[in-house]
Image (cartoon, protein in one colour):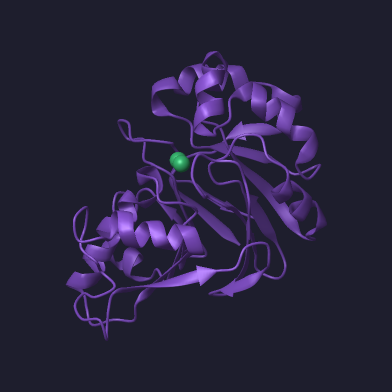
Amino acid sequence: MRIRVLGAFGAEGLAQRPTAFLVDDTVLLDGGTVGGALSVSEQLAIEHALVSHSHLDHVAGLAFLSETLAFFAPRPPVTVAGIAPVVEMLRTGVFNGVVWPDFTAIPSADAPVIRYRTLAPDVEQPVGNLGVTPMHVSHSIPAPGFILHDGVTGFVYSGDTGPTTAIWGAARRRQGLRAVLLECAYPNRLAELARIAGHMTPELVRRELPKVPPDLPVWIYHVKPQFYDEIAAELAGLDGGRVTIIEQDKTYTI
Ligand SMILES: [Zn+2]
Ligand SMILES: [Zn+2]
C-alpha cells in the first residue's frame, strides 16, 4: 500500500499544504489540497474521496478537484464518501451553490462529476480496493478517523481529534496495520485551545501513545504551519524516536 502525502499540515503556509493523502493512486484520504500536489492526469485517476469532515483544511482541494473533473466531463463520477453527518455538511455547507457549486448536478444530475456515498460507522466496508472502517474520535464537529486496509496491510488515520479511545481499540484488534497517522495541531502552551478545538498537542500525543497499537511507527500530520518549529521541538525524541512528523510530498510504502 502506497500513501502519498499531498498535504501534511493543518492549514496553508508557504509550500505547506493542508491535509490530504493519496492511497494507491486512486483513493483520496481527505482533500485539503489536491491540485497543488498532483498533475491533472493524476487528479483524473482519483476514483474515491474519503472525507473525515467538512473543515476547509480537509476539503478545499476537493472543491477545486470537482471543478477540474467538470472540465473533463463526461467521465465516471468520483465517489465522495463519509459518514452521514459529514455528507450532510458537505451537501449543505460546502457544495451548496453558495460557497461552491453543487457538483453532484454538474454537468447534469444524471451524469455528475461527484456523487456522495454514506459510510456506516464502526464497520469495515469496501472503498475501491480498500476496506475502510470509520471510527469515532473527538473533534469539534462530527469527524471520524479511519482504519484503511488492503487485505494485507493497512494503517490507522486519526483524522482531527483530541484524546480519544474507540479507534485505538479497533486498531489494536485489526491485523496487519503498519502505521499510525496521528494529528498534532498546536504547541503545548496552547493546550486550552487544543481542548476547545478538539486537537492534539505534543503532550497530549505523549499521553495518547499507551492507547495506540504498540510497536507501530507514529507519523504526525496536521501541524499548524505557524507553530511548526515549536511543535517539532516538543515532539523530538518522544518514545525513543517512534514519533516522527510526516514529510509532505513523500510516498510511504507499507
Ligand atoms: Zn483539520
Ligand atoms: Zn477539523
